[in-house]
Length: 481
Image (cartoon, rainbow, N blue to C red):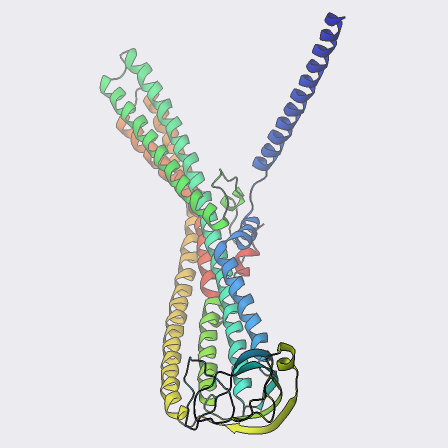
């Protein structure tokens, strides 16, 4: 019986283990398939831009600044609402009176006891209470509140332009890093191909040297060329790693081995002209909103010296443990708590007031002057940015023209270099040329291959520079698949 039960228990444990292993294997296969599918799907430039705009922390910060300034607009509008203060006070104390002048002390709390004047101090004490409803409404401010709302709206416009500017700059940075990484990956491929050619030459030289057809020095030159090609490959990989890390930071993702869209190597932009003026560049617009906000701030400061019309009203109810006939000879009062907090006297007051701080004119004058200087500084920075972008636009047009010429010329260079390398390698194998000529042909082919790899990318980079200068990012991104 015990043996049978142990067998059943062992069988059950074995089935459980098999189930667990099967599940783990299936999960690993699914994960591997998913990872393989992700690797096979290249990251397009438009997807990279979307990811970067969604994940980048600085853009999220700018968006939060905009949300904060939008909330402050509503807060400024709410300042038009009246102030309504309700207060309930219950206390215990004496009511000794004394003739004399008093003045309020800022930051200190005074005692508002009132009672008859006696010849000496007494310590008769009772409970008292105060129930207060106070309202004050500045219903007309001669444009001060409206100006303050305009200033809050100007801050919203500035923060909104700052967000758009940050998104634009981030899109340009991502596009530039994307194209740079494409170039770096291609240069790694070229360095690998150059190493393979150098190794092929090394094998040929070694075979001919062993048979005595070539001098031993050829083997040394070939070995040195292989080492140089390996070092070049290492440098290319290091550069690719650095640019990959830059792109990952802009996307706020892990610096994985990105698989990118390689169609840019085979295509050139079909449209390079834009009708968008530099003034529409998001960077220029942001500087314009700074000027606008400063102008509104100046107007607000000018209106802050104006008076205000206020409606006010107070309803006050008091209670006291001291009797109305309390005096120095007949001290009628009760120490009963409920007797002291019971409301017994009510007063109200309502009115209208005009308040104006006359000396604020002298105080605000210098603030207005300072704000006008700030506006002038903003205009200087606006002119600087506009001039720089205009010059950059001219440079971009020149670069596009030169890059297009290079793109049309590099196929000729590459074909000539490839033919020369093929010719020299055949001649060398047949002993009709030396290792130096073959090495020069190898260098020429490597340079031509590199130029061919980056020729079309340079056109895209020049177009991106023009899009960044003009602010017409659609000129670049709409030609991107």
